[in-house]
Image (cartoon, rainbow, N blue to C red; front, top):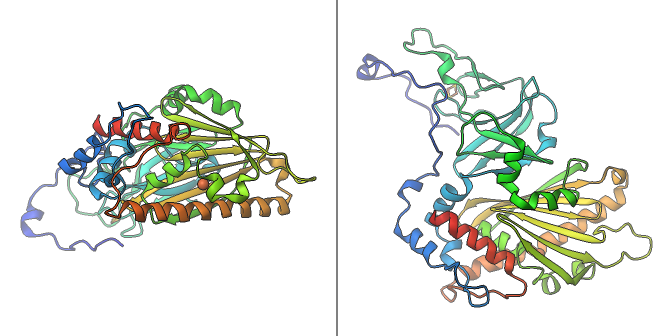
Length: 406
Ligand code: FES
Ligand SMILES: [Fe+2]
């Protein structure tokens, strides 16, 4: 809830001429709260991991990477508020006037498709007294602030500022919503919070977001042909990287923690490929029993797009997992399920698949929350990597280290 503003200006502030603001007075770069003040302890934690040590001899990052609030502030500033970030899927902005909102660190954003079909993104903050503007998702022809009714078009322009008669040095063209750069790759909506240039070239986005992995991902059916079926969200009591690490262990934990899933996979066929900012794990599946439709298909592809987006393509399914940090020891993971059109009528198959997936997810949540508690214990400081399987995890930690020192 927004804090009520003082209604009566002081005589001195009334006498002072308000300085007109630049239209869309955008900071040159958005910074996480207090990121500028991130101090030595967080930097010391970054330096405690040495990416130059080969995997077989390397130790993992220290537990402070997973527990320290200042370290998270540094990550928000150096990792999440730089470069492209996955924020949604195209089904959320399919029709003109569709919108959805989100939050990353202290950035509140709204993504919408304007009446002309142009995709737009803005900071979801009213230019009057900073109230959040839009809420949730849905359809709107304009954004009316719930506080005092200032109204903005889906192109970000301020259409109406209520009860401002007598105001001086005010041009409503100067008070549009602050824009965010937005783009689409395949079925995914991406945003970047550190670049305010208007135009986005698709090839550049592909290269910046996926690098040389883009072709492999396209070839493996990560495209717009699948139908978005449903979304599931989980609040997990662990640092966002614990969830990513769990994903990136090359199937190491599968036989111990996911008995049912392990019987459907050929774990000896597991392979890991690393690219600039993407890693891909692939695994063959055991043949389905009897005439069952094969949920896992013949080859599963698990792509990790740094820093926090996972794309899983198996059989007729694709699911994506977005691990959003909430605080140093909590994250929200958003699962979106996409299915081949031909199976949309097969409710039995859908229910069974989602139930199997939910079981794996519950098993992973228990693991991740157990790891977080262990990381917070005084007994643990650093660990080791299993060199033949945990390559993608090491790659992830090296990328983080590079961004956090850069
Ligand atoms: S905060 Fe006053 S209209 Fe939005
Ligand atoms: Fe798992």
